Length: 219
Ligand code: Z5A
Image 1 (spheres, rainbow, N blue to C red):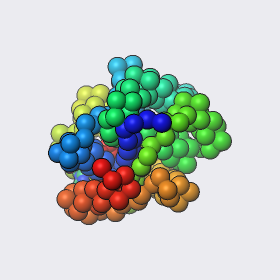
Image 2: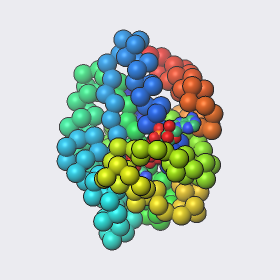
Image 3: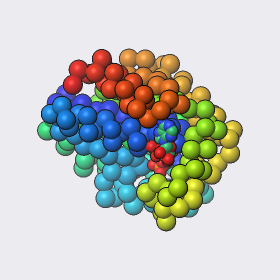
Image 4: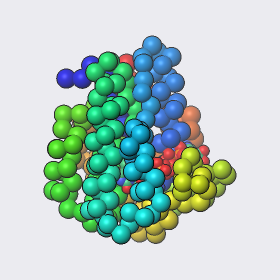
């Protein structure tokens, strides 16, 4: 068993994951825990290269299953080089998206069979499952409106820092299917997942995140 704790953040576009992972990492650091703040796709050198390819839209031709394989190739490297070593030294690993994103994007919204994704998850993730997954829930149109209003773009949004990436530019139906996908995951695994209302102000969401971490993992 890993000595550290593994927390993942999930949710649709613009739900506030990147904002909240940073606040949680600061809070854990202040309470004396060493943290690794990381993200998917990416988090290791090779995985960041795969990220660039995936978000550019050039991987679209592989279809949703091909994309899932690429996300898992990146995840395998990330787990081996960053996540497992950090957990073994007792760090708290906080990851902005992880395997539930594959289940929601390539599975629920993209049409890849859940059994195929479950198999990949068993092979690649194995025992390194998150101790806690926080799902930030927001209506699809609110999340997309937030991204449209984001003035400087998120780092690497389309590999130039501007404009929507491949996934952000998919239609509202795709984003609604995503939301349902995440809510279903939480319903099926209540011992691991917590759903939080991401429509609230940043500080209120941060309080809910801390309450979830505190009550489930006692940092
Ligand atoms: N993907 C996949 O398909 N399969 C997989 O297995 C994995 C990923 C792992 C990665 O994109 C893409 O890869 C992603 C899924 C797919 N799809 N897309 N696009 P990314 O890493 O570049 O982006 P993201 O993870 O989707 O994050 P995001 O949607 O760009 O945003 P966010 O991290 O959830 O939110 P944020 O950056 O913290 O906030 C967005 C804006 O809202 C910003 O202006 C904030 O200031 C504002 N904000 C944040 N919180 C609030 C609150 N509470 N109120 C008001 N405004 C707020």
